[in-house]
Length: 559
Ligand SMILES: Nc1ncnc2c1ncn2[C@@H]1O[C@H](COP(=O)(O)OP(=O)(O)OP(=O)(O)O)[C@@H](O)[C@H]1O
Ligand SMILES: O=P(O)(O)OC[C@H]1O[C@H](OP(=O)(O)OP(=O)(O)O)[C@H](O)[C@@H]1O
Ligand SMILES: O=C(O)c1cccnc1
Ligand SMILES: [Mg+2]
Image 1 (spheres, protein in one colour):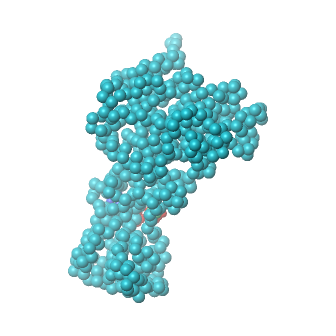
Image 2 (cartoon, protein in one colour; image 1 turned 135 degrees about the vertical axis):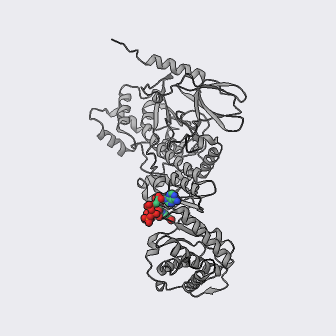
C-alpha cells in the first residue's frame, strides 16, 4: 500500500493523477507547518491521530450561499504527496541547524497512506461552519496539509460562487463567457478562474489552455486591434468566397458588402439613420467574414456603433446570406449596453422585415466591458437585448471580495475533542469528529444543515429532530425531514477499508452545482437581504460544545 501511494497516487486500486499545477508540491505550505512537524516529531507526538475540519465562517459577496470547489485538486495533492530528495535538502537548509537527521528520514518515508479524507461533493452548495473537508491522520502530516488544502479550496470556491452569482443575475437563458485571463492574478489565477467559473455555471471560456486541460468549451470574438489594423478595402487581395453549398462563388465579397450597404442606407425603414460608414471597418469585417464565413461575429464599437459598426456588420452579414451563410452576431464593448443592444436589435429586425431575411432579427448580441453583478442587474432593470455576456476583470479577480477565509481547525486528537476559543463567538470552533446532514422539507427545499457527534444516530425521514444554533441558546427549531442527505463522504480512505468516492468529470460537477442552486429556496438566493440558511448542531453536540467551552475557558478574577 505504502509503495503504491508513493509511486502513482494509487488507493483502492485507482490511480489519481498529480495536481494540475506542478507548483502544487509538499513545499507549497507555510514554514510553520514544518517547524511544528519537527517539534511533533521531536516530542514523539507526530503519529498521534488528529482530526481537522476545513470550513469557512461567512458566505462571500454579502450572500447566503457558497459553491464548494477545489476538492479534486486536494485529492490529487494527497494521493501524490511525497517529498523528493531535493525538497528534503531544501527543508533541511531552511530549518535551524539543530534539527536532527532522524526528522529528515521521517520526511523521506512520509506520504498520505495513513490519512483519511472525508468531503462534501465538489459543486455542492455549502454554508458557514459546516466542514467542507475532514482530514484524519498523523498530526504532523495533517498539519503539513493545512496550507495547501486551504489554498486549493479558498479561491476555487470563491470564484465558483462569484460565477454562480453572475449566472443568477444574468438568468438561465443567457450565454456567459469568461474572458478574464489577461486580468487574472497570474497564470494559476487565470487557469483556476476558467475552471471554476465553468463549474459555477459559465458556458465557455476564452482561455485556450483551460479549454485543453479541462475540456471547457472555448469561445471568442475579435478585438479592436483587428478592426483598426485595416486602412481600406483595397488591402484585401483575395475577395472571393464559395457559397455555403459549394455550388457557386462570389468573386468580390467587398463589392457585394458595399452594394448591400447602399441598399440598407436607402431602404425605406433605415433611411437617414446613418450616412457614410467607416470603410476601413467594413474592410475588417469583410476580411473576417472571408476567414470565418460560417461563424461571422463582429465587434462593432471601434468607431461608432449605430453610425458605422452596425450598418457595416449588416452589410457583410447580408452578403454572406446571399451565399447561404448565416452570420452569428455582434459584440458591444463600450457605451450604454442596454440602449445600444436595443437599438441594434431594432436595426436587425428592420433588416429582416425590409429584405425578407428570416432570423436576421434574432442575431446574437454579446456585451462586454467591465461587467459585474451590479451592471448585469442594472441592465435587467433597464431592459436590454443582450444574449451573451463576456465577463473578465470583476469575475476572475473576485473584485467584490478578496478571499473566502477558509480555516483548518483541530477538532480532535487521540479521540479527545478539542476546541479553539475566541472573544468573537463566530470564531469559536465546533469540536469533535462530526457527521453532517442536510435536511429537506416538505416542499423539497433544503431546510437546515445539522452537525452531530460521529456516533450519534443519524436524523431519520419523518422523525422530529431538535436543531440548535451552535452558540445561541435561544435559537432552535424542531425539524421533521422529508429527506436526509449525509454530507461528508470518503474520498481518500488511507489505510482504512472504506469505499472511496469517485472524482467525477468537471461537467458532472458543474451539473451538480447548477441543480443544487436551482433547488435552493429563492429567499436564500436573492441579492438584497437574503435570508440566512440555518446551520445547526444536535442537542447532544450543543451540550458537549458548551461543556468543553466552560472546561477550557479560565474563570476570570475581579480585584
Ligand atoms: N445601461 C447600462 N447601465 C449600467 N451600466 C452600464 C450600462 N451600459 C454600460 N454600463 C457599464 O458602464 C461602464 C461604462 O464604462 P466607461 O465609463 O469606461 O465607458 P466606456 O463605454 O467603456 O467608454 P469608452 O470605451 O469609450 O472609454 C462599464 O462598466 C459598463 O459595464
Ligand atoms: O472588461 P472585462 O470584464 O475585463 O472583460 C474583458 C475585456 O477585455 C477586452 O478588452 P480590454 O479590456 O483588454 O481592452 P478595452 O478595455 O480597451 O476594451 C474585452 O474587450 C473586454 O472589454
Ligand atoms: O474573445 C473575445 O471577445 C475576448 C476574449 C478575451 C477578452 N476579451 C474579449
Ligand atoms: Mg476593458
